[in-house]
Amino acid sequence: MAKTKKTPRPKAETPKGFRDYFGAEVTQRAEMLRKIAAVYHRYGFDALESSGVETVEALGKFLPDVDRPNEGVFAWQEDAEGEKPGDWLALRYDLTAPLARVYAQHQNDLPKPYRRYAMGPVWRNEKPGPGRFRQFYQCDADTVGAPSVAADAEICAMLADCLEEVGIPRGDYVVRVNNRKVLNGVLEVTGLSGDDRQSERGIVLRAIDKLDRLGLAGVKALLGPGRKDESGDFTDGAGLSDAQADVIMSFMQAKADTGAETVAGLRALVQDSEIGVQGVNELETIADLLAAGGYGPDRIEIDPSVVRGLGYYTGPVFEAELTFEIFDEKGRKRQFGSVAGGGRYDDLVKRFTGQEVPATGVSIGVDRLLAALHAKGRMRADMQGPVVVTVLDRDRMADYQAMVAELRSAGIRAEVYLGNPKNFGNQLKYADRRGSPIAVIEGGDEKEQGVIQIKDLILGARIAESATLEEWKDRPSQFEVPRNQLVSKVRDILSQHGLPGGGADQ
View 1 (cartoon, rainbow, N blue to C red):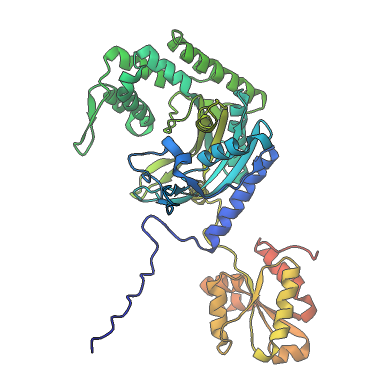
View 2: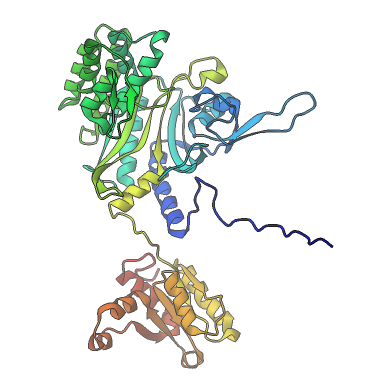
């Protein structure tokens, strides 16, 4: 008789390009999102939670590649209904395309302008790499139905406030603002307008976007015949003449000491382009509005080098850059870089309605911002664990549950040890692994005397590391207190260590 083949066990591993998030990471992200949401709410934006799944048709041409229905997204086709083929559905690629669909679908019921913020995961079917995952969080705010660039100025101010709210101080960030109309005007003056110059325009835009990495000389090479990198690989350039390249280079170097000087330089460059002049006027208005609100160039500045990559931006574009230095994986100093970006996209809703609807918004890269806070030492890598009530007598579990209930009612994170209580040492090891600041101990003798032992695990660990025997005797880390002082003593210890839950009785 042939042996029955065993079903192979599944591999316990995350799919390629995905990762799991544990306690501290999830808590820290939730706290950061709470702070950002508070700023959005203060500015008058309403929360929106749209579906995580959209039709591929709704996501549309703004995906990175559309040679296949599911290129760039995780997509599947529903079963056919009779002779009608099933719809192609996809996990959302960002939070902006779903907003356009929501607005078009519910516009009769929504206020105009409609101001919404949204937070949640998005999915991209792209090749993963270091720090680049196929699922990540975005945190967006958008105004739909406001044609005035006052809406763009407000978004920039709100973005600056968000960065400061989560712990990035002034001097460590700058919100940089440009306008795609100005850039279009420069391309027009340079002779790169028209469908027949689409390829050259694409190379020019990508070259400008690489200024920080390649420098002016590298960008100029890409505007001309091309550039050979350090490895010897050659990248074809846009093939512009020296005169054309000089116009582009002048545009990239138009940033001056003040916003007014920058605007004046841009105006001189695009004076022969109607669309370019319109863009310069919009930048000037944005700068004036921000200055009136107290947002000077130390926080928000006009910078012609900002080029957002997505094709649907039609006006102002902005990017938040962190300016402090960190060390990369090879020990080299570098600036942290961009953590948020956005702009005006007046054509996106038009795909659904046939009518142009003005819109502007920003998206904050949540994981990037968390990494920045860790790099600045503004966020602990670990997380405070709960106070652990140990179990010395399993027949008195009700007593231990009463203790933990008192602590929780006082707003203190706490739990009863629910493993095998036979080995008390294992209970303390558990508390240590959980990052617990305190262990509560009550055996039979303590119960009879009406007292409890409270062990300061943080102080105990410090003493164990460096204290002499005499210091250990002078600095006890375990205290015996009356049972009715459980909450007050725990609060006192937490307060000494600057941890949540400390303070006077409430």
